[in-house]
Image (cartoon, rainbow, N blue to C red):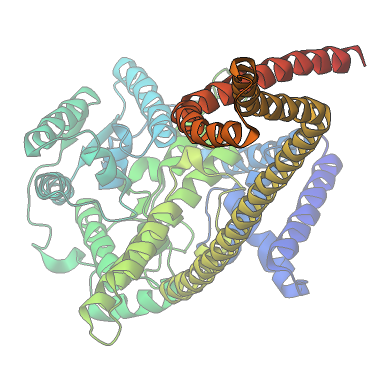
Length: 571
């Protein structure tokens, strides 16, 4: 690629970077801010990310460019170009594939955990790439009897590892939870039912280090003589201001630098291949302190006490004279993968710092929060943690990395959410009351409708029955009248016929000598007897007549009803 094309591509990248940063910040950048942002961007591409407010913006931009093939290709070409420039700068040191002496690389705790996969698959792959290059260089060293790369760890580093496993065992046995930001601790605890399982993982960890040929350093007193001690209270104060870091972490970093300075016997003015000893760490505080102004290792020709895994991988790659067309390229050369790694480390460090601040606040009655709010804040912190392979532009919380008051913001957010939840609950209750009232009114209306329908049906049924009765009355009235006439006629016959018969008998038996007065007396003598006899039989005769009339009427009603039904059917 021509130089003009490379410059054009870089211009396109920086313009997109500025646009992206302005969109995230929702404000325009000044010329000075743009220049600083672009300078920090190329510093990251060179493998020296600066821990400031710009890096989250740069990281978010690079992750967003992953979806744009052309933009990602420009990023890769820019990264490769910077690696080539570094190769030319160190050409005198890397012209030979041999090391003038053994290079002892002392691995920090985080690197050891990455080696066995406790920090996720991406960090483990980065270590595998580095370990493969170490193996290739050592094979060549065996043939040429030159210096080798030896991987070691200090006794203090292994004590830190043992403390990790002991803390994990206590967490499992007591049913606790790992501190947010401690990915390795989470991985160790995961799947362990009791402390014995943790001890089993500890034994497997040591076996894996042995398999990878990572050996412990010889125990010694690094402060005798004290000439090589780089620790001091004044330096810690200077670095605290320069790095904006915790004093404890700065002191721990300086302790490692003292060990390296002791092993170098105070001689760091040489090149990396001849320095003999270097500390390898991915901790942001260690990296920043190693190149700090306060420590004086920004001067040309001075090898820093510490570097990171990416840088060592790049230097070994150049030492072996590998090119970008030589097959497999280390994952650390992938700009996106490297960005994910740094962002994940920043998230872990930020989460750990915020969690420790939260613990300090809980010890103070004035700043202590209730358990519900505490649980919310801790859960929110846990969600901020991301393994490198899980970091994307969509889930990266840029505001969290730039925030200086996460706990207060989280508490305020929780209070807002609780207020909204309470308002939502009240609204839900009011809505439920309204729904219940509507349902109750509907039920009342339904019951009224049912009652109205039943009443209407009753009225219709009564009306129909009344019409039927009227119709039957009109139809059967002649029958009733005829039956009444027959009944009266029969009753008249019952009473009159015996009198007529008796009168006829008396007239038939009358002698010529009988006078009318004697006949009349006979009538009045016989008539009461006759009426008494008829009256005695009147009740059964009357019942018989009425029952006969009823049967007659009923038979005629049935007959008329059938005729009416047939007539209605015909209609």
